[in-house]
Length: 180
Image (tube, rainbow, N blue to C red; front, side):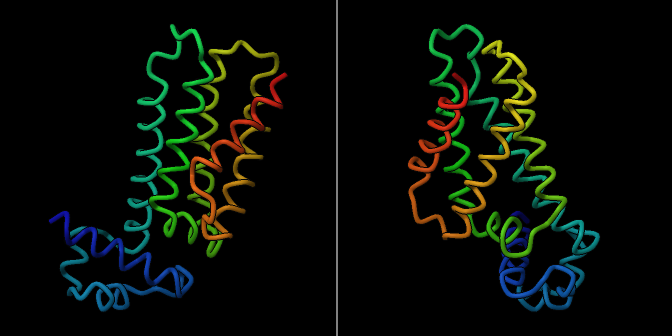
């Protein structure tokens, strides 16, 4: 069952690499996945449901990763290690799923995805930043998210040539420089 869903999801990514989402039909998806329509409809209502479930899956994974990487930050002596670990994990996750992220952020930008991604990053950073007791934390978080998203966009456009750790170092060092 999971295998068929994965085949359908991979087929959508393959097609989105070549076509805009609005051009993709269920027939194209079924042909690409080598399944019949009833199999597709056993898992999804339509192509929008498919894309939304994929987006929600990645956003949920990012949110869960944040919780895992920042667990214990409240009582930690060096809170910056938690921030560094979170940023490393975030860019590693994006790297491992770069085709999906590249298509939805740079090739055929999906506003729904971008809004959900930025919203989850904003929430994550806000929770982390609250541990540092900064002046004007909302502005700091929004500034940080804007810069990080710019780095992410450029990195994806360049086919993630740098290792995720290198990109996370860039983002982390810029956060530290901003937060003086």
